Length: 127
Length: 127
Length: 127
Length: 127
Image (cartoon, rainbow over all chains, first blue to last red; front, side, top):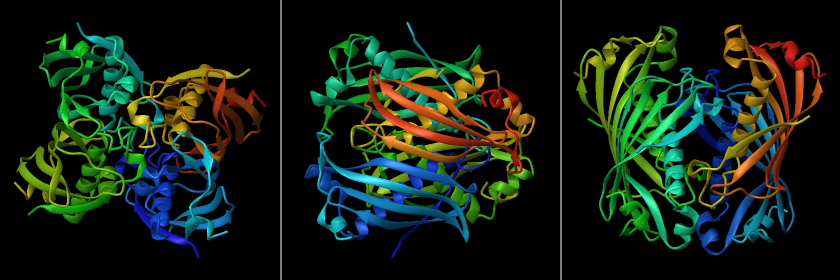
């Protein structure tokens, strides 16, 4: 049950190689995670006021093929492993049928002081 | 008495035109403002804890010539007008003798709640 | 006859002030210009292959109120003045009825070698 | 024999969490790679005119602790494995003695048409 999100490549995303600057794929998949989090019923601003933020702990990313200006990219987000404190997601970026980029992301929940804390129940429900 | 700051162009700053993406000059001159503010004795983190942040109110910018990968740019920052609540700066970006970009920037001080407040005395001293 | 474009604020757009980093409004309005250019029948990639790129010459921008994470912003783009070589646009960013940001933008057409050239007829038609 | 590079955190690098936005560490280490490539005698602009660009193929990154506004970060770059076509680097970001971020990066050389090609001899010399 992957979550699907669409985002478009603009001039700001490209570099002098004529393609999307590699670090910007991390932005694209973070946009998709924000949409996914909202869809499962969480409000990141409310969570933050309640003292909880998400933090990326680990990323393994593979760059298969480049995206270009105007490309409409589809980002899929799939929960892979969930414990009380740690969420593992697999995310892919496709252009049509072509897989351009994929990543495994490990997220944790933190207090505003930077201490690990339990993930919200809406996320633990995926475990 | 302009403040001088040097910054280099990296891949992240370029776009598919092969030159620096236009919005990134605003980043370059903001870096210079942060260094200038520090040099006149202000600590932005301490100010923020004390409830004061700077906000840009107005920018007039002219793009004269493009910068490219590897260029070492010099940013000059010159105070132009200072009142209790408003700071006007002129900032230029040069590559060697060539003027690439210049801007007039109007800044105000705000409380964290977004209300205008007096600028710190270190800045008002330029008035 | 303003062009309308909607864009959402993500984590990447915010800064430690808790609001959208000021330079990112230039990205938002550039996205809108790309959509507008496409809507009037131009293909930026084809233009570039034909040797024509757009360049920003001048920006006057006013920051009225901040945008925050999750805000869905509406960007309007209105042609104001068009000559053979120069296009003036007025762009506004609203959140609901609130005007957050507005800018006057002057664009020119350039050859890949950086020489001014005539704007495409689809744009000159606004003159 | 690690290469050392220093870079500072500015407002543009932070997010509403009050710390450096996670994707920006990829920018910091890319700056370091550009400096390293230059130090071993390569000119990325000349390489590109000769038809060769570098592309990131794979990144494994761990986020240990956050960086904040004003932090002066040290990025170390260490070649780990080099074949004719593939370069493996280990990169770390320290704040003083504290390790904030580390990544293993796999790079390849590509023609402008996107086909894999041999790495320049200056890099293969690390093999």
